[in-house]
Image (tube, rainbow, N blue to C red; front, side):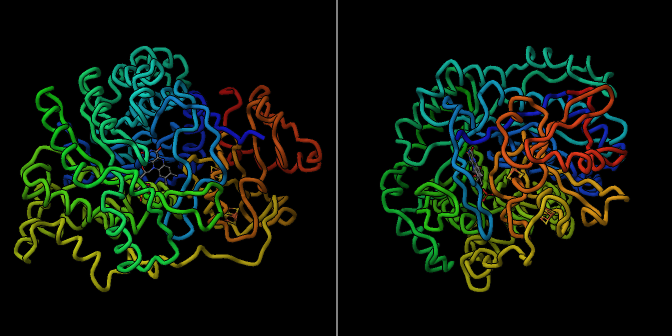
Length: 591
Ligand SMILES: Cc1cc2nc3c(=O)[nH]c(=O)nc-3n(C[C@H](O)[C@H](O)[C@H](O)COP(=O)(O)O)c2cc1C
Ligand code: SF4
Ligand code: SF4
């Protein structure tokens, strides 16, 4: 059986949901108003990204949080201002094994590429771009967002070889991101009331002008070189190359992961390292591509790092290999940066080096380490694993608060000035810079943020078996879902005793790719994405559905319900749950 794909919501449906949900419960895709970030006029957290400023130095990394339009919008509401769009590649009808995300302790995944067709990805990014412009100006959100939301940047990501990247399909993607005016104009008509006043808005037509190249584990250096030159020369792009943690070599990674951090449950495979870019060759490649960028009038930077390929000993997900992310990757990526700065003095745009090549960073960034990460001089710091944990997009605002507090407590008011003072402090403490100081701190005694022991705590479990109605109501399935697929609706008063509890949880099946993340966190025994009522809007998707599936059929101002065979007895209850002011926040007229 083909695994379920995602069916993105239309621009009309997303905006309609935002309007309904905000009006009825001051939430957006269940993100509460208290988790919306507001720019603090007392502290400037903006940073320079390849010649443009973004209001904050954090955002979602290329991955599950930048695939669908609402994901990007939720991250923006949370305070992200740099978005690494999910990698687009020529093979756009892949079957990805399920489950594909395991964040029980650190992070593992097998979700190595986009799950949408390239044309769908284009539309998701254009829709997100337009919705952000609309929400910036939408009066009901004005108090939560404040008068100035600050600039944001979308950064493209493509993979994985030159043939694919120079294909008509991927070229169309790149060209549309650089000038999306046609798609924007086509989508204007989909802007529904009460956003009608924005139909004629001047949306900036250039969605992205930088690109991060995601290289497949094992991509030969000459191929990377050819792709970067092609992107710079033929498309006029500034390019960042995302490097792999294998740069540290088998022995280097083995020593850090196993000896320093104690991950004796992680099995490395030598072939992963042998096939990948080696450190000395990477140094040559960076030098060469910088000089090419100079002659082409472009900028070249690096990103640390991609995930680490390891043996899938756990077998909770299918496949032989899986990709490690989260806390231990932070130590590997920081150590690589330290080595690269030593090997390439004066090259990188980090304090003390005076170079021009930016370093972007995605590796186990969390609230406790955001300040130390940014102090190294990297920007942005983006994350996947942390946003897959309890609280989801709501974790961004506390992260920014932690960073702002550090800056203000140091007596500075801007991120740039604070970084300089952190650099001076590191030098005074005997280090080359804040990078070296950070690596010493995270590989030294007493830092259990990164060790196996410090990350051994499992999600809470109880002895209940998950049922379709009623549950522990911990809300975790809502917050850990990157796609906003879960909804929390109050139990109708007259049914509360019968179906159990104050809240009911339902899944919008077309936004669920069965990644498994809600199952990891649900304290009860069972998979929420399969056991809770699955709502469909698309007739053909519903026709192929299994289990407790229900189709919402728009009829006038309401939805009527069609049940999958065998689930008719639940139809009346579902009707009561989705009806009413706090019911399903979808407008039938939008479908
Ligand atoms: C589920 C999942 C999917 C990912 N998909 C992509 C991708 O499509 N392209 C890419 O370059 N990196 C991808 N990544 C890697 C992230 O962009 C990021 O570099 C990595 O996870 C390290 O950051 P973290 O420790 O914050 O998760 C993915 C990561 C995860 C967890
Ligand atoms: S509902 Fe669960 S399985 Fe589905 S996408 Fe969300 S987290 Fe993944
Ligand atoms: S389904 Fe599970 S994760 Fe979701 S609210 Fe209920 S108990 Fe929590």
